[in-house]
Length: 238
Figure 1 (cartoon, rainbow, N blue to C red):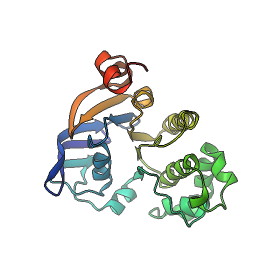
Figure 2: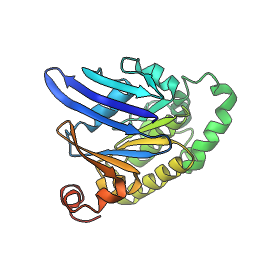
Figure 3: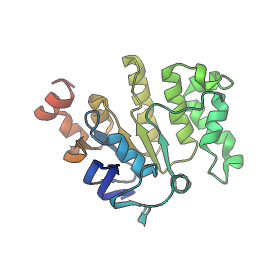
């Protein structure tokens, strides 16, 4: 198992955001966390990436306990994140933003050309806009940039937090097509997504979060056909 989360509890002050959740991400898989707003999905992602402290439980990556490891060291291990809200550097160009994604890699100078080639191959629009200031780009373009920046770190585990948020349906389909291609290239993905239909379609395995607890889990394709899941998260229709 590439990532193991065991009995994780996370608080915001006195508020318990996550209660005793456990899940795993096998190497080479796409695993998704779905649930309503406030279910604890983004908190889980921030905890895996090291941006939220743990009250109890463990986070294990490649067999190593990283529960209290700082976020920048997790990047060096191969955990990178495309955050909720994209989080691009608005005053920097596209190329400069992508450069920032590789900052923790000691071999970044030697592999820069191949790294840019991979990202521009996945996102031709970014190559067209390489000199454009990121803050002037559309939401869809910024989402592409956020994912591309995360890929520049050569992730063993790519964390994607709400990649379809605020995008038009046509762009959502495009983003998920690219996510599929990233996976086919060999990258393991942990996906948080409110668009449950797209998430379950993309995922090998899915976990459903409600108010900080995992209430269901199973193969993405199986959960997508479950009547109760369809009614609660898919509007009765996939």
